[in-house]
Image (cartoon, rainbow, N blue to C red; front, side, top):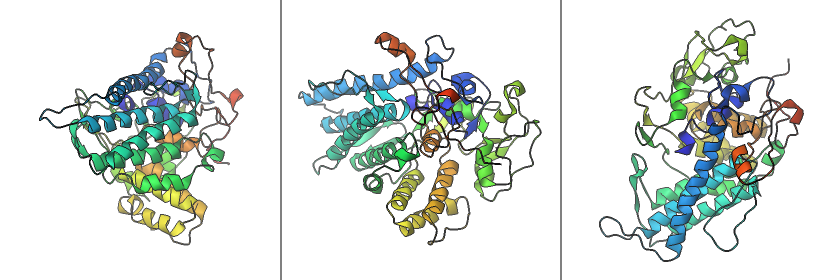
Length: 439
């Protein structure tokens, strides 16, 4: 549930990517999306330090529990289900799955992390670079795939594991494949890194990925999507003008500096009418900058403000399809990639014209990233941030990854460090790129 929490970097990353916008300081949103970008306060005295500490500690909490379970299983423990069936392999696969996801998000979000797995006499007690952490996550996900692919293994995860849905061994294997593909695609810190991705490896995972959306049911009790609760709540976050400008290039890419409402955007993409709603009453603080303003709210996944119930998409089949299309484009199979796009949400939901098979690779990639920007809003944790990062499009001075939280550095008696701010724009840990059009 850490990835659906508001006590995590997720809300800040959403506005740092200029997919969402908000002038409120909660969860670090205002501080980390202010312009020009400022250095991240990684001290224990920062007002919202708990937001960033809690997520980091939650991921390691997941690892501690799963590692303990896996250690017991590897030492011979047999787990018997309520009707006497042997559930050992099911629990083992689920344990490796959560282990892989926890390590994967540590690798995506932080510049380095501690790779903590089941004790094997060779534990790494120093922080490893993010890509090593990603590869460790892939090893765990490969273990899921290996277990679930055995002919002798058959199970159904109870519907409270992934709330509201049962998953059998084949479907859990598909999830592991899709997350492996996602982690490999999104790990890049800049465009140069993205060009070094092993796209054949990505394609293999994605081709064996999910065939139904991963969307746990939020019951308003044990399961809540506080991220969505606050980003669709009236008076809170909105959709950045950058996104509306993608749909209608005549719409301003930045809210007017005089604070006057722009004219309504034209729905070249029909999702403007189905996924967004226009509200010209802005209640954000003008003294914090009109660039935080927006006339558009996101309504595709409205959750009840009072009960916070409903399905909360985490990984859409359409994302897996877009990963496949990008991998095909990057490996030279333009025609197959175009076919995926033309059979997908660009046409079925957006009602946009199909792409021509003679399209250039760059035009195809532009269409893929457009689709990721419009179709995947409010689904996977940090998607917009990671996509902007790997294209060198995060605003100049934006952190490319978070440092290990100051509290944990202090506990381990390690030197404090941080990223962000225009003075630190090195293209390695702090963006030296941007997305503002040249005028």
